[in-house]
Image (cartoon, rainbow, N blue to C red; front, side):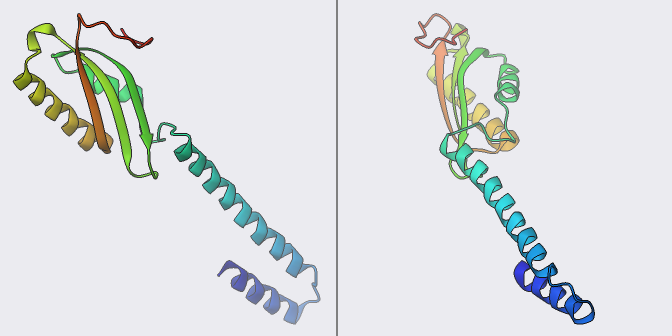
Length: 143
């Protein structure tokens, strides 16, 4: 469509003025526009392939929202990525208070966390690992 428009404009202008350079100039401008969009799409594709954190998400914002829960002591090993630019995924390790560590309370806490992550942060697939504060963590970034 862009090429057709450039040919139309160039042909109208060349009907009135002798500007044979106009055709190659418009061709170069169209090629530059196409290359700009190609590189922009390649950059976005590489972010997806390399599992980078999506632009609209922040691990710090998610940690802050989850630490607002009274039952949660700390959060570590929080990973965010996307499969296609729209389907966002999260895996999070959550350390809970010992007094709140029962199956029923754990289930309710997970439901609350998932609801917040889905509604506020538009995460589609969420994996939560709940740990007690006395549990030995094997990850380097544990609190």
